[in-house]
Image 1 (cartoon, rainbow, N blue to C red):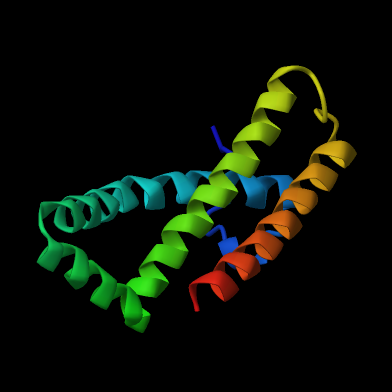
Image 2 (image 1 turned 180 degrees about the vertical axis):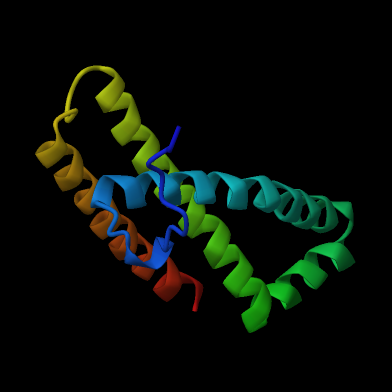
Length: 124
């Protein structure tokens, strides 16, 4: 019995539609937020421990690296919320067709990029 399956599937040749990209980004942003919880709890704990701890966190925020981490955390949170609302609307029966699903995926990606730009300007 011969099975008709691809032997060597080249993933770089597959073109994903916007809804698939939004779904993958939603999962990735969730994973980023899991790590962000640890970072944010550390900063909260340190800043509330003493005046020196608060000054230490303020000093971290003046640096590019820590600001970039905070930007990534806020950007992931923004996308996760936007995609989560989109998924909730889809659970209610809206935007389930291919065309409307792709349109809403493009819309949340555009909104996410705009909000991320605002967050970046605000942080720097």
